[in-house]
Length: 314
Image 1: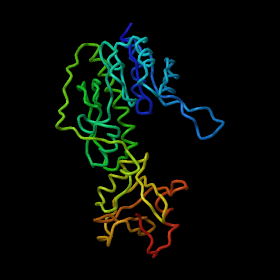
Image 2 (image 1 turned 135 degrees about the horizontal axis):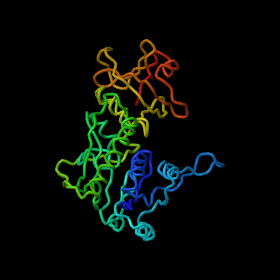
Image 3 (image 1 turned 90 degrees about the horizontal axis):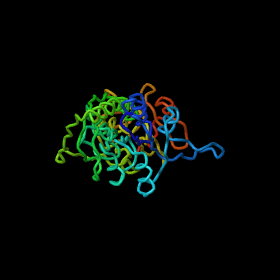
């Protein structure tokens, strides 16, 4: 039999790694998949929705354990009963030491950045928001302080100039599956030379909130574009228009138009919906007004009254 592996994850980001481990048998035996509990759907009569990891695990015929509380003694006992040699974590919860210290060969996490850059909950988003040209994924052994453990290995990738967070996250999930596979093989062969992170180089990737996802139009166009794509499609950058919230999903810089009088002004040019930043104009390609369906910029522009002084974002 191969090494006994417990896998922990919840969203779609973790699914490619789970599937990759599943086909590594018989070198590795997936003895348990841990994920979050099923969530209620909007429709009252619909059955609860399983996590993407649970759906994949059931398709693969793997045993699944669901939990929303990893701090209970019962959870640690469940993991101990599976007798793991190694545990793999990808987009799950913060584990207590009594859990992540159980495997004889350790517990490692797949993180969506080149550590020690972007420690925290939203590394993919903040790399794009900050205009980075490169990012990647890192595997590291867990320790009590979040995202600070010794690095096993990492893989790098460029960030496209118009790539959104959802697009990059999807790419990183596929890259990460290979990183996880390589990490497990290194662990099995006893070839890991874990590298300590340099805390002096650490940067943060804090949780996305209502406050830090609001657009400040007093920014250069490049920063506005990076902010919008760094939050697309979820949770989405937002502003207000006519007293109502408005989500903006896609944009592109607009050449010409001169220097705006002030930021946040709306303008329609040849059917294009433009908004002013501090140094120029941004074309909005996809947006969604509160209570309405998402639409392209041209459709939104058709509903506006040109020449109205109230045409501005706040």
